[in-house]
Length: 445
Image (cartoon, rainbow, N blue to C red; front, side, top):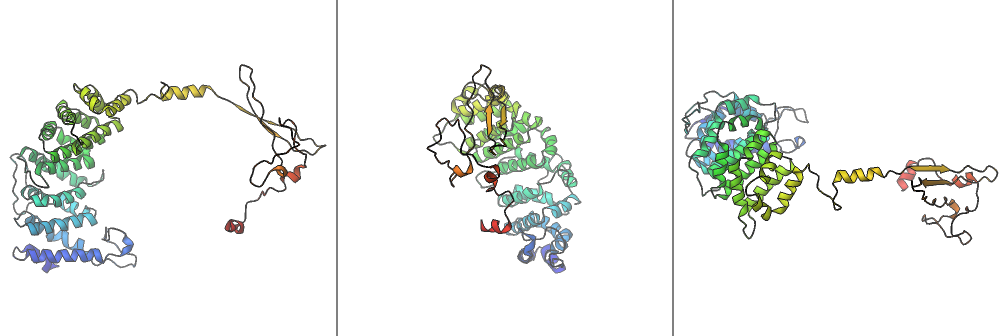
């Protein structure tokens, strides 16, 4: 292990050391016992099903918290795309299979974090933090942005109430101010991972996972102005990521985020985008409509009220009548009209008034005839005096067919006023099996 750390730390042999470390990490994944389930890398340092400690799995805890992560910070900021991508791949492997705890603890306890107060510094110096090195690589190398986003996606997925130290370092250490500052820099377009679009993706992750913290940052910056500029830029990728950011704000369903979304300038840009009716609806239109319908589904009344009172709502209603109709119905207490002009509550109240009580009348058994008692269910007569005819009497078992269909009897009258042939009660119920079937009978069935 000491030689492996020395290989990675030495600039002349870092490529060999990184390739060797990559193979070791793949060996960890292959030799993982299958009883742990997927992913096949230990999440915690503990004994497996055989009672032995996972030898290769313990390398995660033996290698990274010492000198490898500090060496990774220096490699990521160098102009070597191959080694930079190798480091990001191993960091992604680490946070994916270790749930990000190991790397979050290291970053929270890291020393040498530079002050990112204004004016912002876009360079990394030795002995500075790994997170700052990752952010600098995000800005300088477009090829590294995909790997950085994959790593941050797992690092930022923090359960509320846990890792408060990491989030405190992230927000109170001005790292998120650094991210927002990138929106004021010139955009780097023409690539798969554009700068501003990737920054909006990071902000969307922060709102989704820990919106209770980032809202204090968004309250200090003109986030609505940044969103309006992105919506009016004409860059489809940026517009899609801004729509995802606005939808994440809608899903928070909080007053602060609803006020951010219900900014007049933002909706002027949204209406302009939705008013343009191409021959085939684009992904931008679908993303914006999804954001609007999310507000309707989660009953964000502040946003819906802003939509219906917008000056250009007639244009939206002409282009998408179903969307505006559903929003207006939700604002009117969410009671859509039924086919007969009544609301759902009025319909239920109408049927609740017509209550019918059922009376069970049991005929007494004649001991002299040993005849069966006939159970007749009669409905209560209406208040106007009109009564209902009683149903026909029960049919004895001997007059029934095996299929359950009542056999026709030529001697029985049509009206069914007389009873069927008499039979003793015990003969009537002797064929009924009262006990539960045995296990053998259940198997035969």
